[in-house]
Length: 239
Image 1 (cartoon, rainbow, N blue to C red):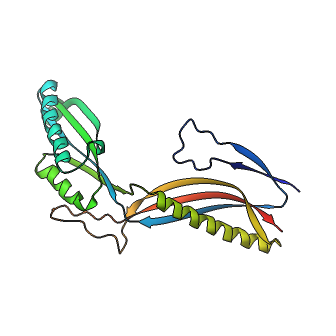
Image 2 (cartoon, rainbow, N blue to C red; image 1 turned 90 degrees about the vertical axis):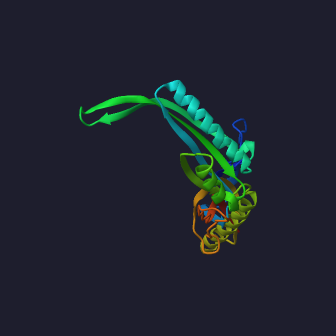
Image 3 (cartoon, rainbow, N blue to C red; image 1 turned 120 degrees about the vertical axis):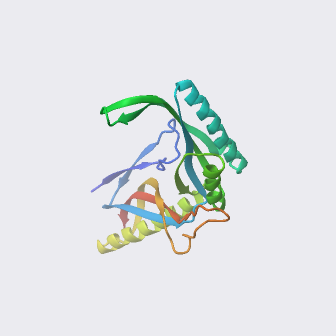
C-alpha cells in the first residue's frame, strides 16, 4: 500500500512575509507512516522588558485638558530618553479625549464637570537591572500617573529556538523509532515537518527570580521566559 504525504518547503510559519508562499512537494510513502506532535520548551533569563506608562489630566475645556496633558506627556517622554531609553524603543500607543462626568447622588444624575485626556506610551528597556530605577523615576520625577507591565522577553531568541528545534527533532525521532521497531520495522525517515512557536509568560525559577532593585524603590523579579517550539512530524517506517 502507498501512503501520500505533503511536505512544505517553507514550514516555519513565524517570520515569513505575506508575500512568501510555501512550495508543496508530493512524496509517496511505500510503508506505513507515523504522525507525531512534539513540543519542546526552553526556559531562559529575559534580557528585555516592555511596559506602558502615561499621564491623565482633567480640565473644564477640551482644549485646556489636551494642552495640559501634552505638556505632562512630553515630560514623561523626555524623562524616558534621559533615563537611557532609545527613541526607537519609545512609542505612543494611545491618546484619548472624552467628556468627564461625576455622579450626583442627591439628584441621581451624572453631572458634566469637564474633559479628561490620557496619553499612553510604551517603552522597551534593554537593561533589566535598571528597570526598577526607571519605573521609580517616571512616577516620582516625571509625573506619570499610571504604569502597566512589565512584560519580559528575550531580544534575540534565535539560539533558544534552534536548541528547542534540535531537542524536539531528537525527541520525535526517538519516539517514532520506538513505534517502528514495535511494528517490525528497523527505522524511520521524515516525510514532513510543520512548526509553530510560542512564548510563555515568565515564571519564577530558583536561580533566576532574583529581585532587581539596584538603588530603586521598585522591586522587580524577572523570573524566566519559556520559548516553545511545536512540531508536527510525519515519518515513514523503513526496513
